[in-house]
Structures are given as structure tokens and as C-alpha cells.
Length: 83
Image 1 (cartoon, rainbow, N blue to C red):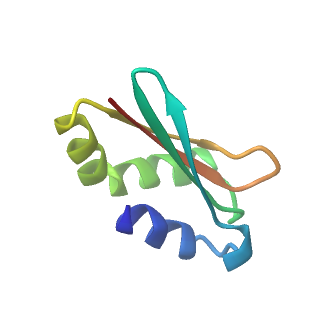
Image 2: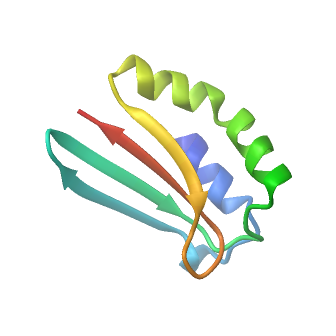
Image 3: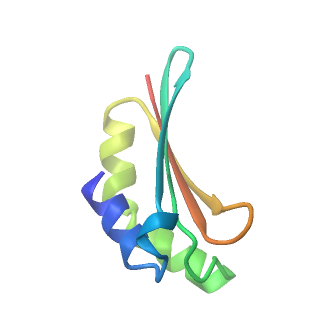
């Protein structure tokens, strides 16, 4: 979580535009960290995924998955699903 929040803070997003949402998602839950940074070009998306490799490995070791997508309205959205 620290790395996800650090990335959001470093995205150029205003602090008030960084969001953290926890949702119930049977059989577990989903955490979404969003920002309103510069968005995700193909190169930025590739670099971000490389930077999140360790986070993804930790999530997968706990039976979950991590994904990164463009956030509606601009910015990025990282989703962590855990059982």
C-alpha cells in the first residue's frame, strides 16, 4: 500500500484527487488507489507495471491480483483484489 500511495503522490496529482476505495468483492475484497496525474501513455503504462512488479508479486503470493488501468476522467487506477 505504501508503494501504491507513493506512486499516486508522485504522479503529479493534487493530494485531494488521490482516492482509496475498499470494496467487498466475493470471496474477498478489492482496494482501488486512484490519482489524477498525467495519465497513462503506452510507455508510461509499461514503466508503471515494471515499477509495480514487487507489489504484484506480494499480492499474488497472497492469492490476489494487481491491475493498472486508465482512470475515467484522467489519471491512473491501481486495483488490488485479495481473497
